[in-house]
Amino acid sequence: MAVGTAQLEAEVRELVRRRGIDPARDTTAFRGLVADAVIDYEERVLRGTAPALPDSSTAAKTVLDAVAGLGPLQVFLDDPTVEELWINAPGRVFVARNGVPELTTVLLTTDEVRDLTERMLRPSGRRLDLSTPFVDATLTTGERVHVVIPDVTRSHIAVNVRKYTARAQHLDDLVALGTLPERAAAFLDAVVAVGLNVVVSGATQAGKTTMLGALCGSIPSSQRLITCEEVFELQPGVRDHVGMQCRQPNLEGTGEITLRRLVKEALRMRPDRLVIGEVREAESLDLLIALNAGLPGMGTVHANSAREAVHKLCILPLLAGSNVSSTFVVPTVASAIDIVVHMELDRSGRRSVREILAVTGRAEGGVVETSDLFHRSATDPLGHLTRGNGYPSGEERFERAGHDLAALLGDRSDDGWAA
Image (cartoon, rainbow, N blue to C red):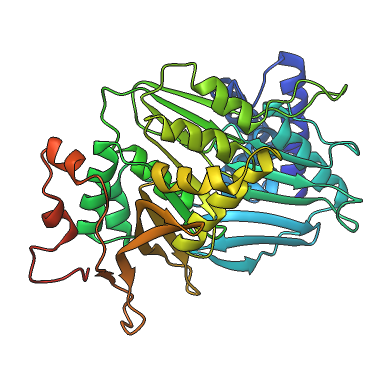
């Protein structure tokens, strides 16, 4: 940092302290303070009493980022092409653009990394110490933060900041992004509208949360939506919406609120729809019980394929206790889950729907029966979705809502499912 810019930053910090301004919350007042400080500083430069600034607008932006933002990382948060950034070590700062990682030229010190981490966690009030070496939090601007400290890591604080550069509010937005074909979007829109239960599967960064948010856009406006997440990520455009997130235990080890607890509480809040940000453990049992009771819902799960997602949902509820057996879970999955949408991130960084699977409602020999609705052809170099030979259950629900299921599936079309 240039000498003049460093001096300007020090003066701004002193003004902030004297006037009692919170740069993160009083953004308008803070920006005005910086603008006035730059004008005053340039007048002193003309009188020869202060070192010159390389560029006044650049210096002002640097000071704004350093005091109110995340310093040298702020430029990446402001860059719409950057979808994630992470710090492996003070001299190893990476970003991902379109799914492709790259090493940046940013060089930090250990103290700077620690200071930036504290600033990231301060708005959420979440703590990070030897007893709690992992933390999930959300920045005031919506980005998700994950931090791990030594001695869990070898020697440096590891930080991940995940942005949501394409906040799809509806399935039409995903069509525009090339994530799925238009007619597949029309089918999924009807699936959600009529109240079928949907699971979105895929690997990390495959676009599961984005797809889930887009599916929420198909929920009828008259319905009440309750969402449960580890940290706030979903931003559904439903007018009647309550979002809840988990809470870590306090210094005494009490006060923790798990995702399973949130699911139970959500059922007491008169939901018309229930959405779980990500199903990882025993909360899957509570979700299945809710869905099996007639409450439409959606959620995401990590899996390598749609069929593996169904298999995983048959295993995760067993973590709820020794009294939960597969003889109960397997038929419950078969009757509670209707559709599985599997997302994929390819080597070029492109996110797309790889397959859409229907759960028929039947289970035999401890295996849930599934039906192939759409899949990506291995012989198609463009990776188009192809209509399978399967059919979803619940055709009467589509009919009651005025949807022609055969037309939605493309069975009455001559030009196939290529998009």
